[in-house]
Amino acid sequence: MTDRNNKEWIASLRAQGQAAQTDALADLRKRLQRSIYFYLSQDRSDLRGLATQELMQMAEDLAQDATLRVMDNLDNFRGESRFTTWANKIAIRLAISDLRRARYKDFSLDELTADGDLLPSSTRLVTATSPTPEKVAERDDVMEKIESALQEALTERQYQALVAIALKGIPMDVLAERMGTNRNALYKLIHDARRKLKNHLEAQGISTDYMMNLFQN
Image (cartoon, rainbow, N blue to C red):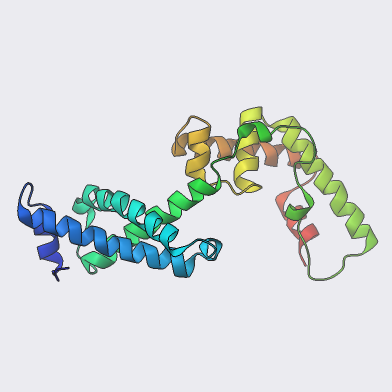
């Protein structure tokens, strides 16, 4: 691979149809593949069970996409760091996004219905000290009211979005795609859902400050 400074990288990658561009693209892809492979093999504990060949294939596929992403963003490079550092950051972000999508590939909105407990035990707040029996009862009462509020105050679409993001940890871009919308519209949907939920609870005398004090250590 050829060593280049920032200006040389940009000039070569923009040399359309010339050998300089072909060489620079090949070098860039190899560098990104190497960085992605290191990330997959060293920084992703969930992938350590995969064989080296599998990780190398993943890195190669992701490097192809990352190279295209870098080319699409050349105009955004400001020269505040080494070009390869900037490009590697794009590649790793792409790898993270791709892995998150793969993790939730089987996620279905049909699973987010208004039936059953909306706040499973794993999501309930846990304090460092043991609360009194009275406080335990008070907390359980508030949690039941929150669960009821989710069912009563929100539309099905608001409910699905809020539960998916706040309780299930579904990535915003994955949820937007699954719901057939975009990030901006999804942000507004969640904002409206939180506002309606807050107003519904406050009408029952359950303010945000009250809940924070109730569940604090």
